[in-house]
Length: 281
Image (spheres, rainbow, N blue to C red):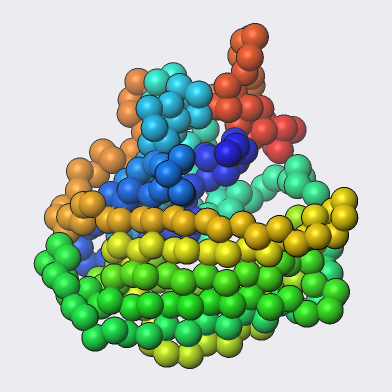
């Protein structure tokens, strides 16, 4: 399994909204038995910080931290290399997306003209469990993805067995996004039609997802079935004041503009710095 520099260094999806209580959330993730990682997220008012530990070697020896903060002058994001004591920073919009770039090195996706119907049914089993001082509900969610004529997505089915707490505990940024109606697949995207029924799950504290994908082989157009199992479990959920230093760049860190250093085999951190510099060139 491979990751692009942007995917690894851009772990924060949205800035955190104001919250009465600071939060530290540590989650252990795994996909099948071969790949696992741990993420740690800190939330405090308009500030957020996320760390990802992929085994013991994150971004080829560079442990990366994302910090998002909001000031009177606007929204700003910092990407820190803890080993190299370097950081990249840039202004973002309200969704955490870089602003001021002249170009984005991503091939534009073409609309397929087709529609992907996603059927989602969530059922509350009635079981309850205390998790970190909150009552979690046991909910089973079944999802079917049915591509229509001309759609580029593949059909799939999945079942999510999870325990969830109420979203009211979390800041707005950790709650479900609304208004998403396109899904990318390869070099194209489909229009999405959601069909939801049952209860709204909430914030996942422990989930197991079993997914079956039906992929069409390009050579002989035969169908190949892939079964994927993934799990995530919150192993720490602490509601207590956080040290403001978590959301600040340490004084001994050096700001860089993304110029790659002279290395025989540039790391993903070096590639990411080059990517940032290239955008603002």
